[in-house]
Each structure stands twice: as C-alpha cells, then as structure tokens.
Image 1 (cartoon, one colour):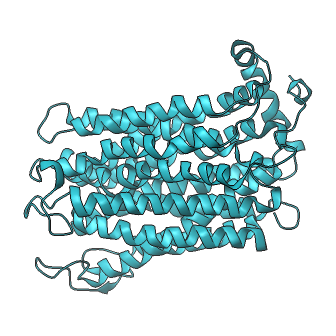
Image 2: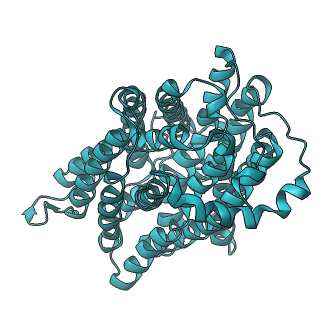
Length: 466
C-alpha cells in the first residue's frame, strides 16, 4: 500500500484553536506524569525492590523484566495503532481506552501487600498494564500537537508540556511524601505527620497508595483535554477497514523510510538513546535504595529535587529548541547523560570516582550525609535537568519533519523507535545485575546505548532551525 492510499488532507488545520485548548492539551502531561514519578521511579519501584522482592538485586532484575515486557508490547503495536488512528481520524477515543488501562494498572498496586503470596505478581502485573496504558495514551496525545500551534512554536509547546508534566509529578510526589508515605520505623511522613486516612506505615500503605493516587490524579486532570482540545475530524473510514490494511501499510511505510530525509536515522537514534533513558529512570531510585540503603524519605527528597531541575530544564529546553534547533539540544543532553552515567558507576557506599575512598554514612548522620550520596544526588539533578529537553526536543523534531497527514503513524513509529529495544535495555540491565550480582554492573550497559544514540543523531540532516 502506498502513501497515496492515505487520506489526502493534512492534519494541520486552517486556523489554530484558542489558548484554552492548548492549555488543556498541555495538562495531559500533568495528568500522566505521576505514573512515571510515583510508580516507575521514586515511590513504588523502590518499595518493590526493597520490601516485596527478596533483595534489591532481585527486585531490580524483576522490575527490569516487567519493564521489558511492557516495552515489547508497546513496540509491536504502536505503529500499527498509530496508522489506524490516522486513517480513522480522532485520537481521543484511543486516549480514553489506554487511559483506562493506566487507571486500572495503577489501582492494582494498592493490593501488593507485603507478606501476601501474590504481592509480587500483583505489583508486576499492575505495573505492566499501567505502563502500556500510559505510553499508548501519550502516543495519541502527541499526535494532536500539529493541530494546536504553528510549526515554529512546536519546540516551546513540547517543552512547556514536559515542564508542566514534571511540575505535576513534583506536586504529587510532595503530597505523597508529606502526607501519605511514612518511615516504617518512625511512623511519620517527611513533614513529621502521621499519614492521612489512617494509612499504616508498618504495612507500607502510604507507598502502595501511590497507585490509587496516580489513577485519581489522571482522571481529574485529563478531563479538560477531552472537553476543550479539538480532535482530528473523522475520515469516514470504518475502523475494521482501517485495521485490515494496517500491517501492509506499516510494512510499506518502513520500506519508504530511506526516501524520507533524516526520518529513518532519527528514529533509529531515538530508539537507542530513549532505551538508555528509560532504563536509567527505571533503576535510578532502585539503585539509590540498593547501594546507599535509601528509604522512602531519602528517595522522595531526591525525587523532589530531581523533578525541580527537570521542570526548569524542560521549560528552558523548549526555548532553546526553537532558538538553536532540536538536534543540538538532543546532542547536548546525551553528553550530560553520559557524564552522569560514568559518575554513578564510579560510586559506592564508601567510594567516589572509582578509587577515592570516602566515609560511608552511619545512622543518625541525616539525609545524604556521606560524600558518595552527595555526588549521586548531584548527578541525579543533572539527569533531571537534561532528560526533559531530550524528550521534548525529540517530540518536537519529529513533529517538524514527519508528513503532516501521517503524523499519528509516525508518532507510532516514534514510539516503536523508543520501545522496540526498550525491552532489551532493562532486560540487559537485569541480566547483568543477575550475572554479576551487582547493581553497578547492571547500569554499565547504558553508556554504550547513549554513545550509539549520539553518533546516530549527529548524522541526521535537518533543515535550519530543526
């Protein structure tokens, strides 16, 4: 099937919608981010590794396999579903379906009670379902971008969305740490309070409540997008007919990539460096819990500080994107991630820069008391600062170079490029962790991913300003 068989009309409207429609679209990032902040990184994942799993290394390995399984499902289905959405028109019905999966998976996490024989299974199943829902909903939300602002403002729109998303993650994390999740030894939250709603600290109910909170947060804050943001018009092609030609059209599109300047190499580069970023975020909190013995309070403060830098980085990165081009922003962000990965690998409880001995923390010293912890904190803040610009500029660069009438299909390929090996990255981390019984060995694989991604993106030829 050729490109000519697609609807001929561009997905860019003759006039752009009012500001309230754009703001409502931006709030999708705000609504979805707590899943990645609370569940994937800073609250539930470390709780799983340190409490539900038999030891942190096994927890990191199991979490890696679950992340890989979800990534494989997303990789296999995203381009096909994106192409079907292009052929039928509207994106909101897809967001609703996969948003429901996010809500279901997040809600399941409450039932992962320590000591229950099914706790690990429930946690991993809920995480996989929620991850698939969150990622697919994001794909179809991204495909709405080109209908909202002119091409020259896509960088700022994407960066603002990421910044608002980080801010939503920050606030949800602060609420969780200040009022819900408590230290199991003291029974107090970070604010020195007893948990709200009578949540039992000893049973880690505050950590588990991060799941239901994520689900409720999404339902409330995604609603303005459904009510106020215009969707693509229906093409009149029935869903069954659109799906019937999906596989053959996807094959034709992949075959066509070499004739689309920059797109194929960009998608391959994105596939590699996003894989590294996914694994880095998936294991960042787990690494801190395993290497330094951080608990919910330490991990939460770390997450708050990292999210603050992420918000600032995404907002500034959007402006830089429009000013100097997305490719330059992406390369700079990858260079910083490489530096951070090497720095993290050089750390141990009593070690900095591989060979410099440093006194480890002792009980009662306070938060981040040892030098290795302070260095890890600084490197984490650097990761937060550049992760937002990397993701936002990748999104806006694709929106600029993809054929407008096929934007959903190419955002599906974009998700494919970000996911087709994402099951490989976490799985390789998990395997290295298992083989060497070392969390540091598991993270060493990320350096190769970032180096390869940088080399590929450096060769992408884009128009001036892209």
